[in-house]
Length: 86
Image 1 (cartoon, rainbow, N blue to C red):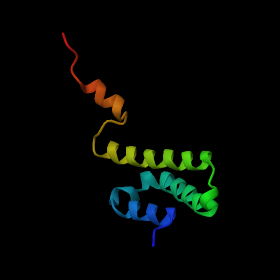
Image 2: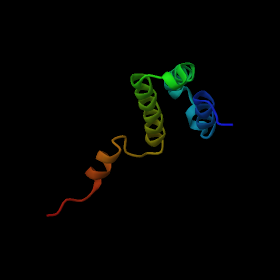
Image 3: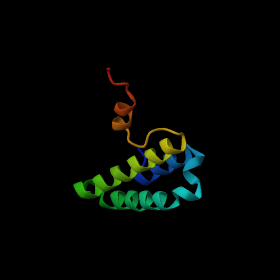
Image 4: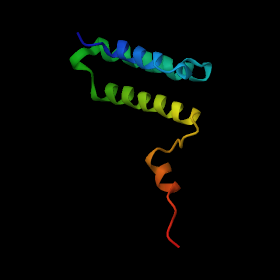
């Protein structure tokens, strides 16, 4: 039996205690709301809804990266850190 989107999100949230810190509360609430909407829509979830959920998940991952001292810019941040030829 596969997990619902909401159940999968809860597994993700439970996998890292930093996600339950107060500074992430609004983002977690948004992710939960969007996950419920995706579950409710089932196979009829709109492209806009799934894109919003994916974007929120990316923000969640960026929040973890920022707490680890990573670059918030993702690939752009990596490219900026590469030394330029003289």
